[in-house]
Image (cartoon, rainbow, N blue to C red; front, top):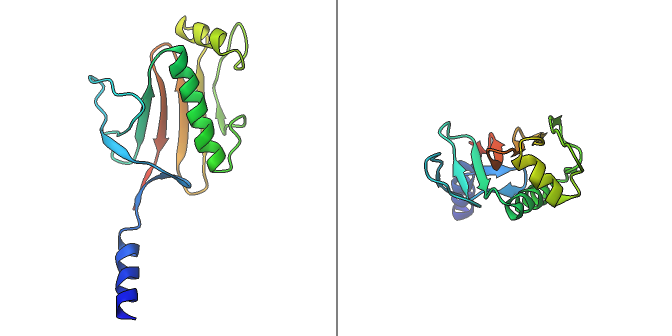
Length: 142
């Protein structure tokens, strides 16, 4: 009985980590804007947020959209219904990846959306002619 109580206390004292709802985040290191690192979670300087950058290619945009959808669906969120929608798409639709990529790179379109979870985290999806990234705000909980 003492052993079980000890284990419960041990696990409850370390029950913090980086998450977005039910999605666990494994951080690879600190974010450094001078060193491009793609497809890995990196911790921002405020220590509560994490970011994952994607290559600025058509494949990078595809990976960004697919990965963010996967995380949102895992948390029973609808990828097509963000809480914040500041997206601007010109000359086509989001379904035409080639056209969307070209208009983003030319600066005529951008994706800027966010989903808030009841537990306090926010997933921010951003694609512009300067960066393709997912940022999770308040990923670190104690």
